[in-house]
Image 1 (spheres, rainbow, N blue to C red):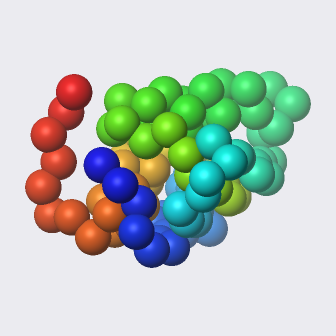
Image 2: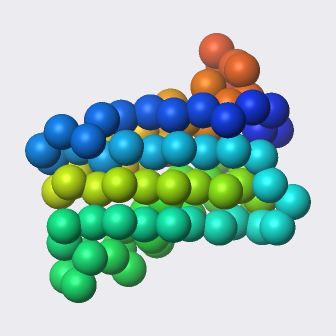
Amino acid sequence: MELKVAAVAGTTDKNDIFISIEPSSQGIEISLKSKVMEQFGDNIRETIENTLKDMGISSAKIEAEDNGAVEVVIMSRVQTAVMRSAQSTKYIWK
């Protein structure tokens, strides 16, 4: 899947995460802000990276603002942002 345009998903509400994604040629770049950075920052980054990898994305610029989202919410927000960026309505899991 190829990223084409900048896109967003999620909110800054409690228990959610706001994801902004845009195409990049510099590999995966993640800028993360989180209320639980010390405890879960590495896990949030890993979830974002693994979700991108699972979707076949090897290069993207991500900005994430977490407010206590659980892993499945993080994954779904990243997936939604990728689909919007790729301007696609279909996704086939690898």
